Length: 248
Image 1 (cartoon, rainbow, N blue to C red):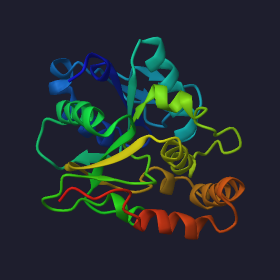
Image 2: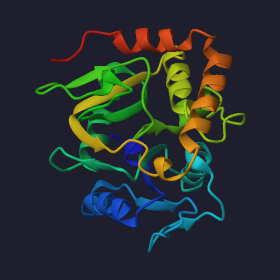
Image 3: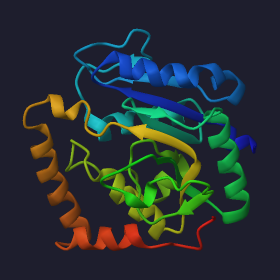
């Protein structure tokens, strides 16, 4: 592992049931010191606070606002990468998780060139089939990614102009647009099939009446403004595209 890639920060975004956050937190803590990767919990003004949270926000900043705060904190701590984790995921592959992610990232950087975003694969996904784990698979290079558990290079993020979420505070679609810009700028987007998670989609959002409907409208306006009115077809084509030969 290179010295720079060891300077990462993991942040779990807490909103909803503390038991979900605790489950993920406890999966990662045992190896945090050994991996040289601090694991912090950011309480996004959750109705049920998380005991031992690193920071509790005074208001819900949604995914995009919380991500932006975590990025600034990571920079202030002298970190080069941020692993931003939804609390409604659980790792299903064998540990180590932090060590594998950082070790894999270092090796990929050495062979493929700069990696803008790295993610575990999902056991299943109704939205991002290109990120579903293939048994016996190694990794896949993709064009777009889900922001459920992105390990992002802060230099790459800065190079493409940051998160770009001022007109979409709820944050749906912001992760997709970031991935598109990283790919266009020449950064690799990697899905690791040896590091897998199970994700309970919209666990907290479903508890807020009308939230998903409002977020979907904002996402459609946001992506239409950046990718054009046919953005859904463009995204589907990119999801089906193999950027380079997949590793079996």
